[in-house]
Amino acid sequence: MLRRFCRPYRRWFVIGPLTKVVEVLFEIVTPLLVAHMIDRAVAGADSSELLSIVGLLAAMAVVGFLSTLACQKVAALTAQGFGTDLRSALYAQVNELSQEQVDAFGTASLITRITSDVNQLQLAVALTIRMLIRWPVLAVLSVLSALLIDWHLGLVFLLCLPVVGVIFWVVMGRSLPYFRVAQEKLDRVSAIVREGLAGTRVVRAFVREGHEQQRFEQAAAEQADVSVSAGRLSALLNPLTLLVLDAGIAAILVLGGGRVYAGNLTQGQLVAFVTYMNQALVAVGYVANLVITYTRAGASARRVTEVLNAVPSVRTAADAQAGLPAAPACALELRDVSFTYPGGGAPALQHVSLSVPCGARLGIIGGTGSGKSTLASLFARSYDASAGSVSVLGQDVRAWDLAQLRGCMGYVPQRVALVRGTVRSNLLWGRDDATDAELWEALERAQAADFVRALDEGLDAPVEADGRNFSGGQRQRLTIARALVRQPRVLVLDDASSALDYATDARLRAALQEMDGLDATVIVSQRVASVRAADLICVLSGGEVMGLGSHDELARGCAVYREICETQHVDLPEACMLEGGR
Image 1 (cartoon, rainbow, N blue to C red):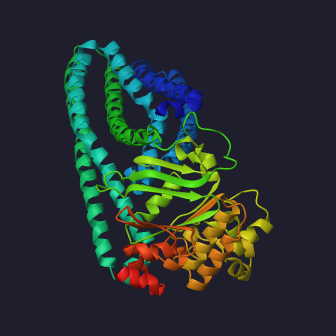
Image 2: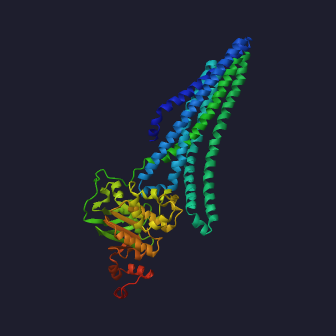
Image 3: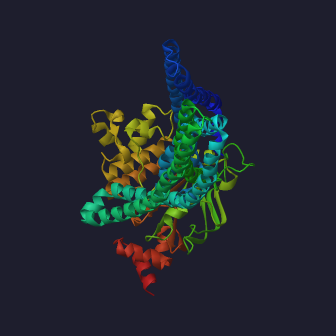
């Protein structure tokens, strides 16, 4: 799956290792030159030959250094390009996933996968170019060169290799689960940090700094414990490997000294043989580190691939109809709709049916957890209904092109979402070709024009992340204006005026009522005043429809609605009170 991100850099995966091959060949030739220098130039006191060998060694060192620089640059370009491409693909994939899938992965986990896991894979790519060819090839060629010098001594080293292989297999097999759990623990740490930073005001207001600090320290300690456990296992790899190889070199020196004394081996050859063994020793140590890095990268690759392989559960159907319905008979319709959140247990909605004519307004009211926001989210197809069907502008939402469905809809979520930039850049999310006149018209309808005009820079006034430099009511009005810029046919306001005073809320509803081109308006609220004037009001409780009708009809025939009105001190006609009291 991840190979496709390496394809654009195929040539670098060839050029980089080739530069390392040049460096390795020089390192293999160097002990032979040193042996020749000891046995011939030094022993024969031939200064001219000595100088020529020293010059050759110096030239090889310069060429090897330049090859290393070239390889480092190639590795950096490839790793950074690979990481950038992979992050972009991951981010695009996350945006394609349904809200249900995002909830299942978890925001903190997705952030960790896009950052920490991709960093681990970048490191693996860089080491692949810089080290994967160098150290294994150096180890193999060093062993072969040693065998060519004296195969009797070489057998000692060959006996060490199976022991090293067993050490690798045992340590890596036990380390891999720890690396996977460590990344999951890191997800937990990220989630706590994110919650703490997002809810700083609440944490301070309830004097919970100590509690949050304790939560963080506990999660960090758990992550550290797993990482330390993995580190302890990984730390055994190098010492055990070096112990085996050092024992082999000690045996070679003892046996090699005897062969030199017997005249079967020269002093230069013994020096070259030991040099090759040391090179192999260092190479095997680096191979051990490579194995650790690749083991960690393997755990990260599985987490990244899990996201990339996820098939969006909400997507445009292959037979989706292009174009918008011209004159639908019904703007919005739900037929026996039920919905259950994954792992949520009880259904959030049960057997909801309603029909909203074109040009009408639908009000949705109910207590906390009654299913209001869930119902509103089905119109924009943030989720797919577990049972039943949802139609928008006379067409089932599953038959819509997803981009067109959301393009004809202005959706203002319960949680305000503004991005860093300016007032203008945030409004242009609604429609990027909107003129300034259209932006101001949307601001006027959203009751936001006055405070935007009061800003020194007007439409170009800065907006901090999440709109932190605006009040709650100002942020809500800006998000409503952003939805209106789109000139939607269906407008869904999910408790979008909860931070507004009653007078501003009333002016907003009056302005929306005068807006042309709206086929339907959905107002989700806990305020009776916000939905009172709606043509159809849906009263929810526990995910079930307790009443459906106009304000007067519900006041006469829906006990739940009357109770909501009474708790909010909404005056009811005396006839309704009498009928409700019977």
